[in-house]
Image (cartoon, rainbow over all chains, first blue to last red; front, side, top):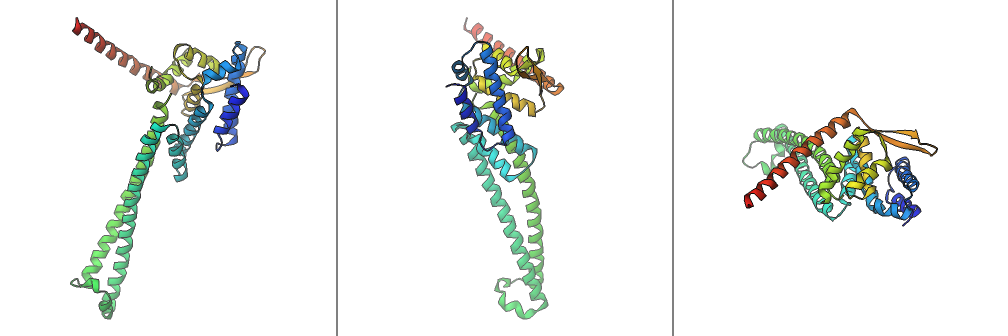
Length: 194
Length: 108
């Protein structure tokens, strides 16, 4: 492989990054070739010691997306960072993608059950309030069997309150999970695959 | 050396070389790859990461007769990080040395 092919492969493996970032990266490698040639090394030799441009490109991409996700928190950003890091190799796929998506779905499960509890609390509250004001409705709400509408009202207020608390806890869990993911990804690009 | 260990050590090497003097990319890569067998291309991603972490800064300087080159220099933060890594490395080495010596003494 010679310089032109190396640069071409590197450039195409960087697609998706901002153009100015790509140019900046390419400049570094072009300078490397220039300096290498000044010390009488051939392009072929330089390419060989540089290593695989596609691997280098993947690393640069993973670094970029992780920095981005660390700088400004966004769902899209963290997903890109996770996928880019997972794409570095089979090892990373297992130790990055699987735990991440496993924990993510678990947290989503918590959030959805929180939302479900909140919604049923609100509906129950409205329902029991209606029954309190218009006792004639009582027949329609057979679930109140054995519970007085006033008790049901308080139970529903409690459910709603607890679900709000639960969702706040979930929010902090998600934030913590985000930070944890970023530092775990950073550790990954540092350690895995030289 | 195992690649997993190498990559962490590589960061320390870059910081240590730059502590001695500012280098341009090729020079730095060359100096490290002479002693540590590593794909030279991976040092540039490392340098970019060190730059965004504010451990190193880059500036352009004209070379003798040639085009201007990108030089890297260590920041205050980078110097502290490098010193910390070096300390950890030294105590790690010492402990392993002691362990190995203990093992050979035990055999005799």
